[in-house]
Length: 315
Image 1: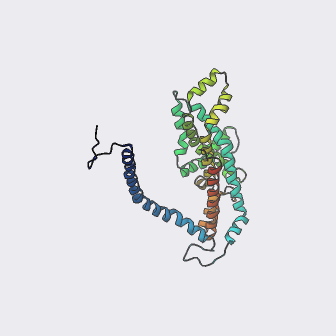
Image 2: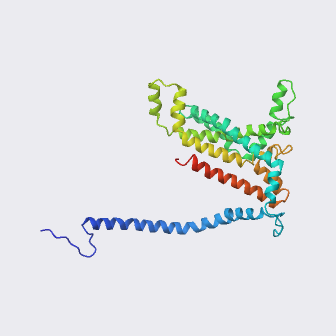
Image 3: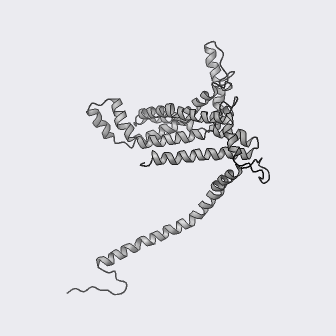
């Protein structure tokens, strides 16, 4: 009869022994992971607290004071800053402009980006060059893009003026017209961020199995049927992510507007962030500006968590 050596240091040859040895291995890896987490997590928490959590809490506290930023806030006014904020006609214009940018992005920018992505998704000669051309505006800094388009819109020496001269007409001063300035900015927004969404869609299209398209063509499906019944459903998670970025970016729009109009003329191009800067920071009304920041923060947080919970919960 064969005997089993159970001397010290020998591995038990029973299933129970093997299972115990197998369970001991992850514990060492878990211990190493715990050490790494304990080593890197405290600095991250400290930085987040100092540069994110503490400023947000301070802004919420300052929003209840009439404070100019000097010394310690002592003039407690409660919710008066918030009441004055929603009574301010410029803030209502800013809310409307943010909504206009959201609608323009969803109705024009994203469909255009998706259509261009479908055309440039295949790896054929020339598509890489066109992708680069359409993506270049997104790489350009917002301030630089704003300055470029300010020259384009210039009614005296800009590109728009030259085009109107070809037809023997006088170019309008687009950025000086309250009725036209916001639509001119919307054109810049679509031009600037169109390439980002296009590349996002191209990345999603390249993950779709090409055999599905081949099978659909063999079955006689038209291009529209292939697009509506294969491309769009399989690209659903990417489209939802693109919509999320477009809406959140539209709410926080600031850098493009400042070099173009700075919120003017007559507050016609204000957004919530430019309103915060013009009516809070530059006027040294830190309490009022903090109230704007709190409202903006609540809008972004409610939208982000609500959108992810309702529309992106399966992604």
